[in-house]
Length: 249
Image (tube, rainbow, N blue to C red; front, side):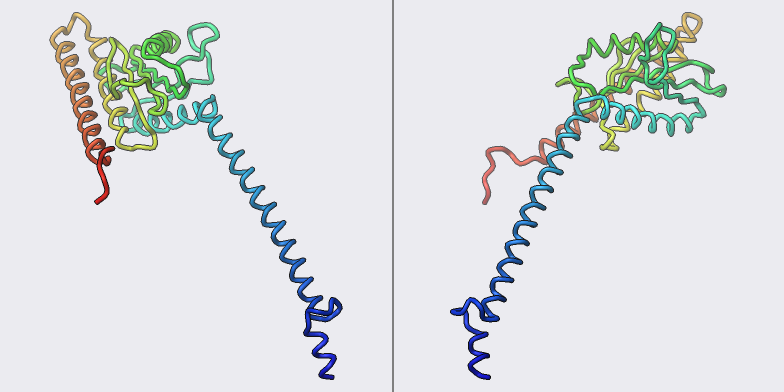
């Protein structure tokens, strides 16, 4: 009847169908609200956990191992171009008792000017390394891996402030590399080529003084070119960034 329909459509009667429907909807909304709040809390907790894990990896050995593997992948591909032999050695001891220093070794191919010459590479993502400590470690790496040349590669994330991307120290090179910036592969390529050239110079010795001098000259030219490119890159990045005193308008 019309009276019954009216009673079911009123909110004044708690027993009416409309009142019951409102309570059901309110209950459903409350439940959805609670589930949404629980979901958001779970998402925040998960994101927080992921961020903490990421930061821990960046600080610790896990991320260092990733950086070492990334350098190994690059070296493996580059060694193939020269028919050289690349070996990951970071998990094995070398000539120095109980020492695993020296993450990768490249052995020059039989077709090279110095077959069998060895170049050791050390990858470093750990915080707190200075240039002095890096040179000490690559010196040990050369002895540990019986290598003639050494290349120490700093991750861009932890490289000491003011360190140039490419520098030579006697029989060793110290580099700064960012595996996420392919443009910095140029630094690795330059070091690989220069180290192979220096291996020839080491073998030439006094018997070919002029050849050794020319190789030294070429390596210094590579270093100057890398420094020049680094200066251009820094200048370009500075020009591309908005001036801190610039105003909108």
